[in-house]
Length: 594
Image (cartoon, one colour):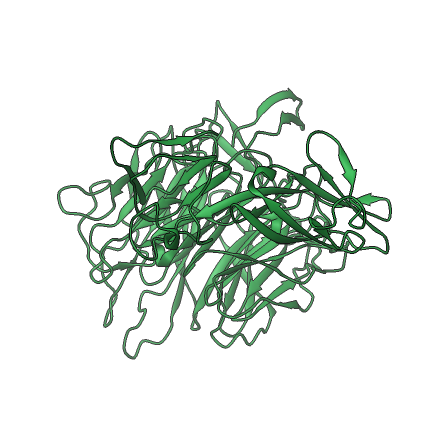
């Protein structure tokens, strides 16, 4: 996201934080020289009305925004400089031969929704992206977005794996897609590649470091890992790169991430293998990229590692890192100084089974980066609230949120540009990208079934004295179950309130006064979701989650399937996913009032 500069000196920039900004390093581009500089620590976006803990209403249920066939990876950045973060993904429709990979760009409409994605062939005879030849069996695509040509806009970096079972497949390369050109590399990066970007040699240009196994799956070859240092030599927007390759070690590396771990203003790399965690300490000089390998933790991960992320979790100005295994999150405190890189033994937290993805960002706006972990077996996103203090790593016990069916990838971003980080997940085994909208600080929607339903509301803060209140118009009024509402509210003197409501109560709000402090506000909404369990008829109650057709005070959600309306109906609102369809047969009408 681009920020407006409102003041500057030789060593200071004063800018307005742009809408859509999230927990990322600041990038500064000098327009005349087209050189780029990065901050050592990510910028943290805070906001008012942050919550003391995560609870079920902190994030909305996942909604499908982008559909695909077999989405492998995704990333987000503002590609067209309109102040809204867009979505980039790689889709390979043929799961057997992996022909015709798509590089897809979905532009942000500005309200948290996306326009229809534009697909570009990555490998396809006669219609290849950047003139690339049609190699088959391309797996596990990796995406990275960064400014490679110095124009101030993020470019797309996309390498691919060649599935060679007996030998290294020739010609595997990567592309860099900028606003002015497409660079197709002759550099070979094959066999389960991972990459990071940054200015490693401090020459003001964004370089690439890739790790790959050229003999992935080869008989008799074992795991021989290589690191490729791809130095950016771009001049006047004409993308060009220079490469050197080192043999790194003989055990497989799962993932890598970057951070300045010893405050020397150089970008180091952390890697996790099956038997250790180590740092590639940046020893580069201008014009030459080089690293020194430093072992920091024998981790005994036993091939169960999934992902790694970097963040300053304890607020001491040093980059810490966190990694996930099958059922645990481990956070390692940075204890480095300028001359020595070191980390304390990791502190672990239970995540659940089959943790496959990790993302870091300040979700609750309190100035501390939190952690989200994706669990594929349980179809859940587990959020860990950061309660660390300087020199001490601590996170609250996880709070789980539905992720959608068969999730495989997770990132954070502020897609509705409201100043709060949302969560995006690849779901349905690569068929959809779903977003869990951040609702922290907002009234918590409570979904009732029409036309009458009972729900339990729980105070979001604890104490010794509880007084529930409700607001019908503009003023909150105390609830007294023994006098005013004997059949409508139950438990008004405890932490839990049972509400028996009818659909005209849509929009009523509730809160609890606990020892002089107000809890978060609950807002009643009547919602009906289409399941299509029996047929396509709107009028069939068995096709709706609540077992009843929507009324005029009901928000209707149709995530998938085909719906046919054969009667006049009135509803409050309608939300439909791109892969759903609704047909209103003549002469009937569907009236949507909001």
